[in-house]
Image (cartoon, rainbow, N blue to C red; front, side, top):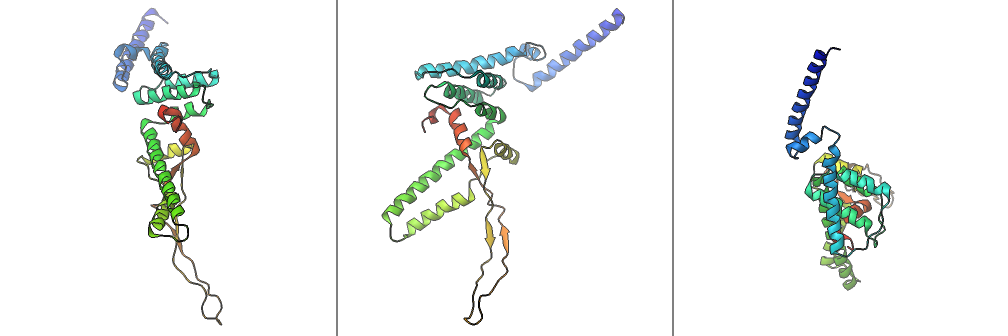
Length: 253
């Protein structure tokens, strides 16, 4: 290969890099000089800044609350920081910091690889959808508590208020909750085991058995159908624990 041919190819590569840098600048938020780093080995610098930001957030909370910390296994810490370094959403960066705090808190025994993995797999919209389910589950708990109180005061007969409260609880437990997410986002939360879809209700047309004494029992054909509007969801135990791990104020909830 001649020097001329090499120079032509080199200039072509350089031009291609410039075009790639320009295109990347339109796709991501970092400043122009950082965009250039994404194409070089110094991509670690961009990720390192996110890691530092998350570590400092965790440090600030630990010191503010005087939390006694403990060591975290390297097989958990490294993937946590690696995944966190790719997150540029400030709200989710806070979740990574919260997760780290809960894992190093000496009062907790919740060091598990599953939580960093899950956080790396969901969007801010999906996270908020889980929070929405948590709020609805708390409302269900309040409804159950109210029902228990009504039953205590109504031991020998089902008053109207008690029946209505029982129906409200039953309807929620059978139908679940709706989540304000796209179908693919709901599917992702199911894939991760954070929510479960309840089976649809089966409706059977009313029928009667029996007849006159000498006729014996009558058999009737049963027609059943699914109600497509009754495919609600409930949060799983893993989903509840995941949210608690990412929310500092819910640690003792």
